[in-house]
Amino acid sequence: MGQPVAWFDITAKDAAKAHKFYAELFGWNIDANNPMNYGMVDTGSSEGIPGGIGQAGNGNQPGIVLYVAVQDAKASLEHVERLGGKTEVPPYEIPGTGVMAVFQDPDGNRVGLWQR
Image (cartoon, rainbow, N blue to C red; front, side, top):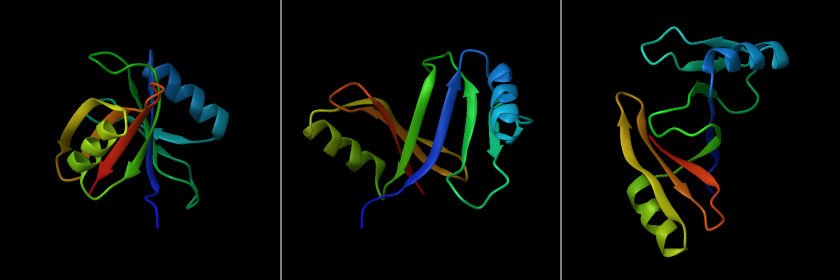
């Protein structure tokens, strides 16, 4: 069985504006009351995948990244590079949550890895 998509991340030039846009467009409840002002999305449904909306800058480009669940982010990035992709963001820990990383596929598409 393949690995599922585990998270979506929307990075915006103006995160507050994006929070309002997506809340109104899709009826999402977006809670950005945290130190990073990262908007945690609550769709109000058990269907779909969880996600959030953050601010571009400091190396974060505007865009959408889907995070795929993997057992080992470092090993997965090594496999990415053998297949012709490249590491964009090396694995880093989100305390108490898991490990994230981002790579570019051979066409330059950004894809995330999520390790619990």
